[in-house]
Amino acid sequence: MTQIADPGIDASPGSLGQPAPPSLTGSPSGLPWSALVTLVAGDAVLALVLWDVPGILRTVSVLAYLAVAPGLACVRLIRIPDGLTRFVVGVALSLALGVLVAQGMLQLHLWSPLLGIVTLTVIASLAALIELGRDVLHHHRRRRMEPA
Image 1: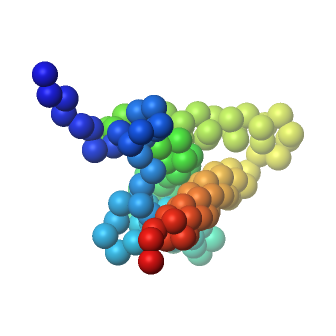
Image 2: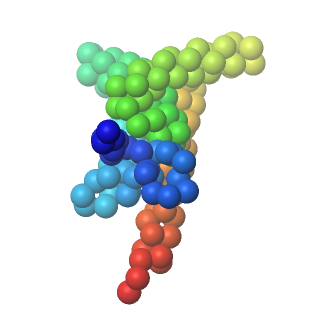
């Protein structure tokens, strides 16, 4: 009976079926786009809030970012191979982080919508920076181990 290999699982000897580390998140250009998009989107959302952009643009952008980005940035660090599962867990984690940040601000008597948005943006940005650093280190290790 032949076994079909899962492209997200490393089948090399000694890997114990662990998820294969992405080669800089699998992008052909070698850039970890998801982490870069998270960083740029965080800056864009903060700019919309700080500049007090009126209307639906700010509302939709901020809500979409807060519902997806912080959790998805954190979930990418644990490398869940299935994209749909990663997205669902990321959204759930984003909502949970939002509740935890709000509860923390209430307990500390520091309630501020701007502080909440900044805190969640910092969480997403730190996770994205960790992902970038990890991928760069992995890329340099692979290049060092390749025969010349």
